[in-house]
Image 1 (spheres, one colour):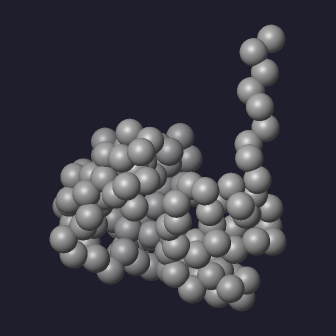
Image 2 (image 1 turned 180 degrees about the horizontal axis):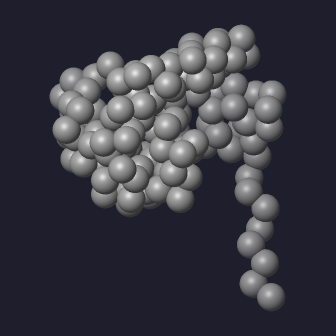
Image 3 (image 1 turned 90 degrees about the horizontal axis):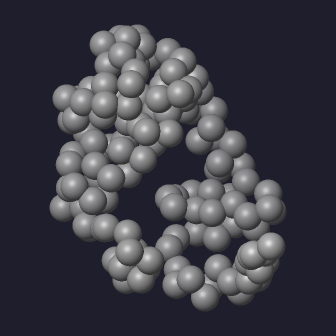
Length: 138
């Protein structure tokens, strides 16, 4: 992963520990549903916090900070997650993922029919999906 990120100029730091991300998943699911304008910023900040800044996503205060910075109400999000409001939705999405053969992350579902588990060199993805179409400059 480090080499691929470096090749395209993306910052990446291998996490020192892997958290249980269930709470982060439920947090993101709530924001996506209830504060959709804030979701893109939260989605990106969760990635950056874990893979760039080395922050621990198992820490509720980190999640609260990221939610607030994205523009959602961290107290409301925490209340909903604590109450279990997003548990069923996250469980359902995990069941669907398993049913189509996803058993880890990252896994790429391409065109709704091809699964590519893990991270691979860019050439592997070209083999699976082909070269991107040329960019028109007209």
